[in-house]
Amino acid sequence: MSTDLGTTEGMEYRELVHFVTQQTRFALLNNILQHPEQLPSMYELEELNPSVSDATVYKHIQKLIDAGIVKEVALNDDQRRQGYPWKFYGLTEKGRAFLNDHNLLAAEETLQQIYDTISDKPEKMVKYENAPRPEDA
Image (cartoon, rainbow, N blue to C red; front, side):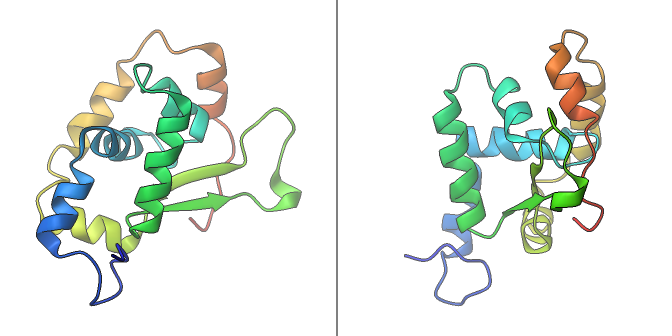
């Protein structure tokens, strides 16, 4: 069964709501929404979900990408800097519209405020948080 939001053969909306609200996927969507640029790197997503294995975080991000909810964006080769991430994850326009239509963005501002209060971020996470992001994401 296709999960592509752009096709009529895709999941029924009810199924898609259930799909995105699965605990790990919903946590990852919240992590994206609360990130200052709404484009966290994989490392940041992994750090924000310490009880979930790195492989599981990656697997669920891939599922969200396959469903058309999340997109992977990358810096151009000339923008990449050694020691910094170059791939980031954000909501697609269709994903944002879907979440908005189902009232799943209601806490976006609160999530960002909570993220701002995290005081024990590892140094690497702060570095990655401040890494250059693609401008056309």
